[in-house]
Every structure is written in C-alpha cells, then in structure tokens.
Length: 118
Image (cartoon, rainbow, N blue to C red; front, side):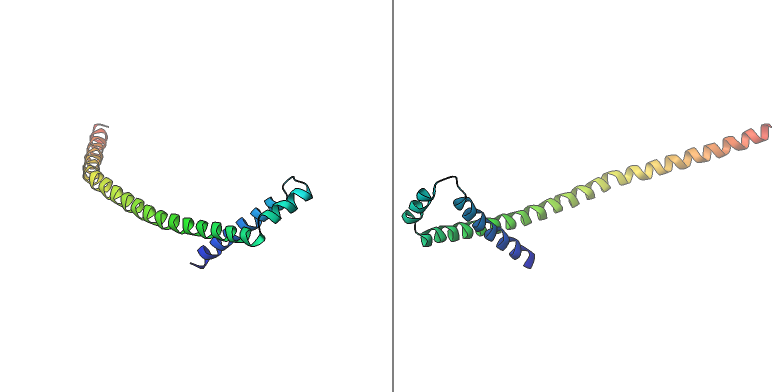
C-alpha cells in the first residue's frame, strides 16, 4: 500500500511542479507575468493547485478500485473458461488415448505377422 501512496504523492507533486513550471515558462513578457500574478493571488493559485491535486487523488483512488474489481472479475472468468475447457476436452482425451492404444496394439500384431512370414 505504501507504493500506491508514494505513487499518488509523486503524481500530485509532479503535477504541481509541472503546472508551476508551465506557468513560469510561458512565452510572455515580465510585465504580463507580473500583472497576471497581481490579478491572481499566489494563495488562490496554490488553492486551485491543491484542489486539482485532491481531485486527481480521488480519481486515481476510484480508478484503482474499479481496476481491482475488473481484474478480479476477469480472473474469475478466465478460471471458469479454463475449467469448462478442461471438462470439454477430458472425455475426448480418454477416447484419443484409447484410440492410440488400439493403434499400438494393431501395429504390434502387424509386426508379429510380418516376422512370422519372414
């Protein structure tokens, strides 16, 4: 479970850092950037980043839960399919085995007849 937490934390921190980098490296003049910072308070920006991070965390958690259920269902379906296949093939395996034994017996009889004729 600690891997999942570190993954989520990495995604949230990475998202915050990338958003900050994208904001700071946009091709605009210093005057435009300063006016944008004045219009939008840094606290407000951090609040939006936090909200986006929490929303992302909820989405990841929900997706993880849905994926776990889907994988469990898929596993059950595969197990059931394999069991059905085994039940279908097993009677045929026995008949094939019997048929091969008959062929082997016939070949032995044929070998004996050939030896007797020589």
